[in-house]
Image (cartoon, rainbow, N blue to C red):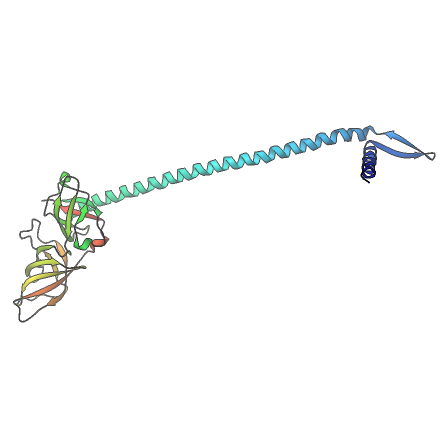
Length: 269
């Protein structure tokens, strides 16, 4: 059975080969085979064209891979350049912020007469309202102990307590350990302003007979604290009086939220 199948296959191949290389035509009832040069040319040229097409397609195929590789390298280069631009933009923005801080210091000096040292807060946490806050300026920049710390708006927010060569620590005015001399601006009532947890302060040792108005400004008195008088601290929000006590407490709300502040200004002595 296998031999018969092989014979059939060989016969079919011979027929195909013959038809491919020869043309057949009938003459006087006889069959004559005439060799076709054209057919031979086709038989020779066809494989050449075939392999030429395959070669071109293969070249295009590998060329496509090369193009993809080039495109990938270009994309990587664009990515690196974009990253570099992002970093440079961030640096430029920080430099702009630094310049703005210096402009604010100059404006404070011109408008309020304060000579200040711009500084950046570099250490605080959610409990910062009851602890020291660290800034990036120290004695090398002229910072001294007990100097007043103000916001960009010129509001008193704390007092320097510890100083070394490269950085300092100040205690926020709202911290429980804070205690400064203050005075109400309109009624001119003096007292000791102490911090509380939160953003409120208490002006203590205010005589019962002193009349103070709600929303009255409270400012530094300049007595025994080592910094100027007249710096805004906050405004009166409530008055707590007890007829059985010789003094009453004045509740004052700080004008600044220390947790939102990034840069501060230390008054030069």
